[in-house]
Length: 380
Image (tube, rainbow, N blue to C red; front, side, top):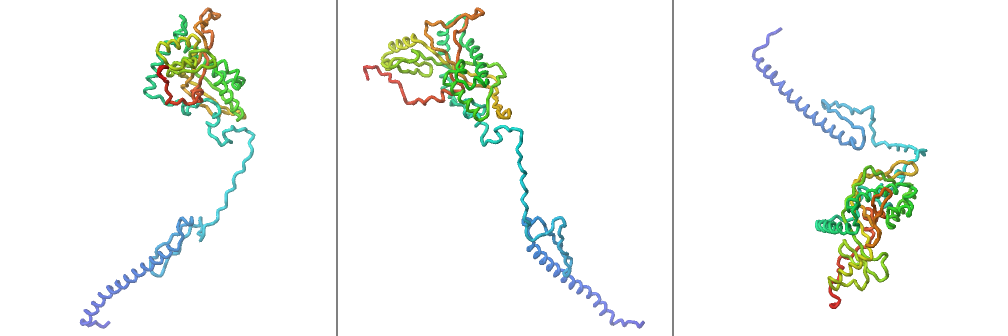
């Protein structure tokens, strides 16, 4: 092999060293161009592909490694790609077959549970009270009138063996148990006359009418008293005068404690001695009084569907308000008598005149602006 001349070696060495640099620069430019082209193509593919919200199939595009080769789109075989969402076939509804098992009325009536007892005058534990909430001054007034009324009741029921209100609370508890036994009896709950021994006529009519309305809806109600009632006296109201009121008599209110049934000509105040005389005359004509009580007990009311026998409502109350009334009697009537065991007792039974203030809520509202004219007759 012929020897290379030394003069050419520096030129060859410089050309050899410079060639790789030019090659790297040119190849680097080609790689950058391929990347820009590939990213442009990928962006174009992504812009034309449907969004994931449009179709359930998501197209995945891989980045090309050079300017001439691209990886095709990979599509899942389980969910084929479609250009438009496919129409979904509606799922057929299951056919309903008539069941031989009778369902209670709550399942086929468009009404709430309270609608089943809307016509019956009984408050559920979730029902709003019929009386407004007492104020601070009304509580003080009622406590004062309770003390005054208790003394008056002891005067009218004056007997060594009858202590008011202790003996009265025992009698009221027995009447309360009798009430819910009567209201739970289907033979007596719809009959006004069967309810009259424990309820006055106005309340008996409401309960009997409500029970018949529930029977028309296919329901019935019964009460289960799970504990002995504990009775507490909360108020008294006395009505003096003849009963029933004769023609030409009016009612004169003395707060909520006393009501006088007196002739119309005595309705205008003249003097305090005259007013005492009018009250004494009314007391001689007779008296009947009402006693407000609060009953603490464990009482469950059950509304049952007559068709299926299934309970619709099971509601428990721990407290209720009752009002008891005495018959009309005069100071000369015998109030007590001996029973078969030789013990003294009342000749009559207390009856319930209001349940959760049904009667009071039906009474017309009294105008608060009405005032008694206390001027003497000569000044009128």
